[in-house]
Length: 329
Image 1: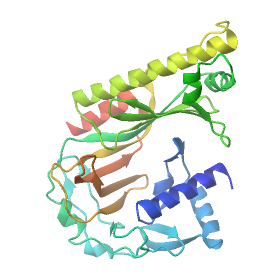
Image 2 (image 1 turned 45 degrees about the vertical axis):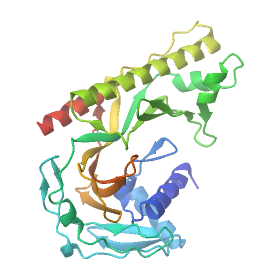
Image 3 (image 1 turned 45 degrees about the horizontal axis):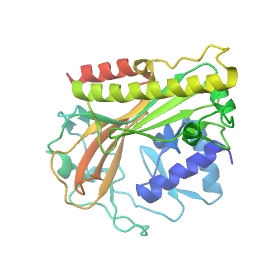
């Protein structure tokens, strides 16, 4: 199996056994395993799934606009789409919930294969839900730095590399990408990967502390990414000294405002506590977007409903944020 095949199976297992839902090709347009981003075209996804079905590992769960699949023997059933018509405009966070092509379910028992649908219908739960501020989380960014992989990888085994920095770096034996230890900056978990292509991936994990889409939130994100810039610049500078003794010009880490945003989750949490059974529902929006509504257990032990849309800005951080703020004004 290729590295992409292995990553795909890991993501399938996570969706089916942890999120307890079937999956479609939209789940594989962009996904992350062990801090590394992957992506699949519709054709690659279809061919791989067809082979896995033929091998007896997967099966089709149902078709509702899109084809949904699951691991063989782990079934969720299908709710008729006319039972829940999700056509309300969530004006408080500019998120439209379209006519439902959903797979709604409860998380009853981790070992149960049959998952019952929540009652009342999810539409009734979220129709008049009071929401907190619009926010972002799971922000994925990328940028290129000439020769960075060769520089950092060449210094991995160097005796002169400080022990603290050696502990930060880990070489993926398959992809040869270099993974840095997760950086905890305030309440943000930030993962950095240096790819063999001299592309650097940065993922801001903040599911429990989303970035509010206001001035304070933007400043909070910018301050954290400035520290990431500084740490990466220091690492590259140290590696350059070890390898070249400063004979060669040190690569420069670009400013974070110019990093390309490949994906983020945009949405809002309910301002009130949710005390019902756990649930998750996903809707397709066009060909390249997903909307989810699900219950989220927070760090304070309480649960809230989160509405989010998975988006692919594919533009610089400053442009992506400004465009999003403009769309909300």
